Length: 82
Image 1 (tube, helix red, strand yellow):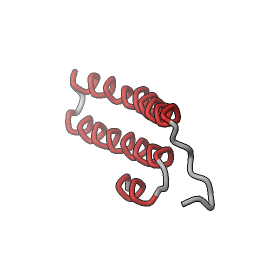
Image 2 (image 1 turned 90 degrees about the vertical axis):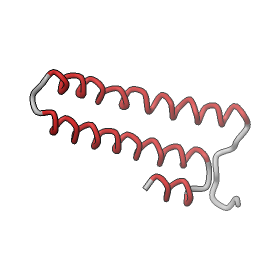
Image 3 (image 1 turned 180 degrees about the vertical axis):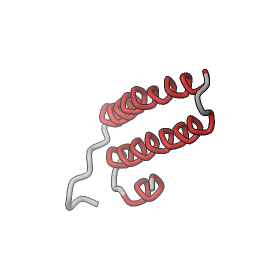
Image 4 (image 1 turned 45 degrees about the vertical axis):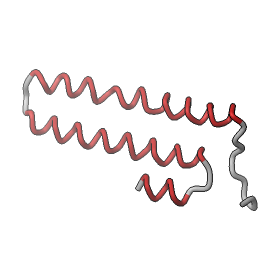
C-alpha cells in the first residue's frame, strides 16, 4: 500500500504520510508475530520493548523529513496545480 501511495500521491508531504502509516503497521504486525512465536520467555519482554520504539520514532522521523522539505522550499500540493 505504501508503494501505491508513493506513486499516486502528488507531493512529498502526502507521500510521507502514506509511507509512515504502513511502516508502523508492518513493524507492528511483524513483531506481534514474533512475540506469538516466542511464547512466554525473556525474549518476549524485549520484543514488547522494541514494539514501542517505532511508535515513538516513526512520527518524529516523518516530521523531520517533512519539515526539511518545507525548509528547502517545497510547497504543499493544492487542488488545481499540476
